[in-house]
Structure formats: structure tokens, C-alpha cells
Length: 138
Length: 138
Length: 138
Length: 138
Image (cartoon, rainbow over all chains, first blue to last red):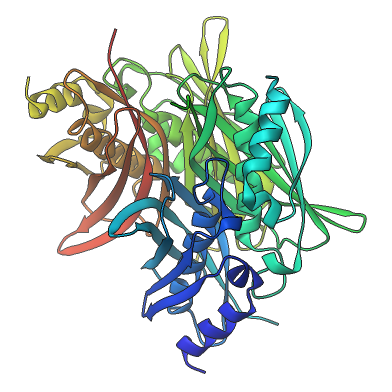
């Protein structure tokens, strides 16, 4: 099965992606982009997208970026991820871009960026850095 | 307005909390607990709770823990949060406990733990460490 | 060889420990304490201990805490560590306490605290959270 | 006083820089590079550069990168920094490159990369992400 198909099947199995309205924007070796609207149901107390939304997108993009570099048949789990939130998630839509910094059999080191789109304005709202673990399902 | 009321009002204004079915379990000075079921719509590809769910609860518990120590009238924003995921979010329910490690006028340093409850079994599934910024709304 | 001896031998082989004047204070299962003076040569621009000193002690204490739970013959490497600096490293001496939060064959999740001692005053100056990887030397 | 002079004066006041043999390689707006040999006295138990060395360089480069964007007269303190170690610090020399991702009056978000140079070989050995706080000395 191609990496592309494996990622799309895995993505479709994540009910969280459906809840937040997320979609895969791009899959290339070492890079995955995930987009989502800032739906009415995913906001914090001031009406911006919740930090948990930005994290969820960053985590998913980074995890699937790692999967593009993982062995055939592997699944991926997030071991740890650190996010710095730079600006409020304001606007219509978020796009998270996950990138592999260092592939590995045991650990894949990744980064992610999240941009918010508000009409014609694009703002970098979060950066993340972490570790994804490839696992071979039993 | 009491801190308790300010936190409950803020929590009620976060539509994300309603989407994930979260509730406030406990508010004491420097500590807040937030609970949520692992609903069908918040899962990752293997059927466990999404890392984004654990992060969202940890972030919210840590942010409100910080609010218990922030000046009257302040709101709180997460500046950064780092989460290590220790075990799958398996079971019926998650509880995140946020704690203030060091209060401050400009920065509040916090930690959080997330436990999963699966029948009678309690498992520590995530730990987090980060920085909350008190802000005075204009 | 006992864990205690393995840690002391490894510690003695780290020339950085000698440069900063560090010593092992305590080794118990899942916890290691490392102490060091704030020597004239390890300071930042205001005369306090450098953030790099606090990190080095936290990292070493956390790594050896992980080694107390690693398989016989394993060495440990730090995969990632996140430190929040809470207060200046002011005083005579620092003590870092590393603790295992979750042992594991592939990854050990750890935390560390660093306290500064200035005469009779003890101050928590840093907290850290990270991942140690047990490795079996070839 | 120019930013360049302020950084060089501050760097000269950090005794830790002298201890590890560090030097400023480059200062441009939003970017600072710091280099250091892997001296005999800064190693871990396998003879590679200590994680604390990589952190110290990353922290210093990131802090001074922030200073290039801070108000006249400000000093900088590291609030938090997270480092992922990708490969052993093997070779003759390390260079850390600190970059400002988002400047700010209260918080400056930064990243850093550390490369090791072993003869003609350049290896990315660490990436870091964190928060620097500009402070106005009393």
C-alpha cells in the first residue's frame, strides 16, 4: 500500500479529524499539511481557536510527516510535542505543516508550524517540535 | 467576582469544552481538575483518545490553575506547553490536573498530569509543563 | 556491577562533571541527585549561574535516574529535555533532582528539579521534563 | 551603544563562554551564531560533547538573537528552552545558530540549531525551541 493511501486510511480512522473538520492538504516525503476551519465548536473563551485545536493539527501533521519516512507497515505514535503559541488562532482556517527533521527507526524528530488564514491575511500562530515513535502493529 | 465564578464563566465560554464533553472537577488555589469522557468523536486511528484531547485537557487545567493565582480581572493565555504521552488514552474518562509551580505577574509556570480511567484502573497517560501568561483584557 | 557503581563510573567518565565541580549526592531507585557549586567560571552576564549549568545538572540527574531503571549493561542518552527557568541561579550551590516518571525498555520519561542554596535559603530555580533512551553499547 | 557592541560586552561578561571556549561567529538582525570547540573538559561518558554543551550554545545563540530584536537597553533572560538531541556531538567544533521566530515586547520566541563539524563533515546534532524574556535592568 502506498504511503499516501496508508496516511489517508489512518486519517479517516481518526474520528477527531472529522469532529474538527480537518482535511489532508498535501503529502510529500517528509512533509504533510493538514487544514481545518475554526468551527464554532472548537473555540476558547475569547472566540479564537482553542490551543488544543492548534496542537491537534500540529500533532497530526507531524505524525503523518513521520509516517512518510517510517518503514512499510508501521504506524506512528506521538511520544512528545512542545508547542509555542505565537498569536491567537483568528480567522477562517488553520493549516498545520509537519516536517521531518531527522528520520529514524526508533525515533523520528519533527517540527510543525500552524498558520491562520483570515481573509487575505496569513499569520504564523504556532510552532512545535517533538518526537514521533514508529510502531509495528502486532 | 470570585475566582471560582470567573473560571466557571470562562470555561462555559469555551465551546471546545462542550464539544469534548469536559467538566470542571475541582478548583482550589493553584490546582484545577478537568474531566472528560473519551467520546466516540475524539479518537485517533487505533480508537484511543487523540493526543489532542489529552493536550486540550492538560492545557485547560493548567491555564485555570494559573488563573487561581492571577490578579483580579485577568484572563490567561497559554504561551507554551510541552506534553509527554506515556500511554494510550484508553478507557472511559480522562482527568487532567493542572498545578501552578511558580506564580508570577508576567508568567505563571505550570505542570499538568492526565490520568485515564478504565473501569477500576487508573493510568497516568501524560505529563505536561509550560507557561501561562496573565493578560488584562482591554 | 551494581547500578550504583555503574552510575559512579559513568559520572567519573564525564569530564563536564569535573569542569563544573559536580558530585553525586544520592542514588536511589528512580531518583538521582547531583550537586555543584556555582563556580566563578560557569556564570552568565549578571553573575548568576548560567542556564546551561542548570540544564547540565538537570540532564545528568535525569539521565542517571533513568539508568537506575534501565536493563543491566545499558547506557543512557538524552533524547530531549525541556527546561523552564523559574528564578536566577543565585547562591553557593545547586542541587538537581532527577526522577523517573515512567520507565520503559525503549524510552524513559523523566522530570528534574533544580534548587539553588544561598546560605539558609533554598529556591526552586528550574523544572525540566524529557525523554531518556536506554542504549546497549555495541 | 550598537546591538553588536551590547552583545559582545554581554558575551564577554559570561564566564561560562570562556570556560567552554565559545566565540561569537555572526550577529545579524534576528540571527546569532556561537561556536565552540569540543574541549577535553566538556564531554559526556562516551567522549562526545555533553548535552549541556549543546544546550549552553543553543541557549546563548537564541538569547542573543532575541537581543538583536529587543528594545535599546534591554537585557535578555531565558524563560524556557526545549532541546531535541539528534546525534552525538562528535568532532572538533560546534556551531549554534539562534533565530527569532517572533519578536515581542514581553516574550521573544526563538529556535536554535546546533551543528557539529568533524573534519569536512557537518551534522545537525540538536534543535531547540523556546522563549526569551527581555528585561530592563533596574
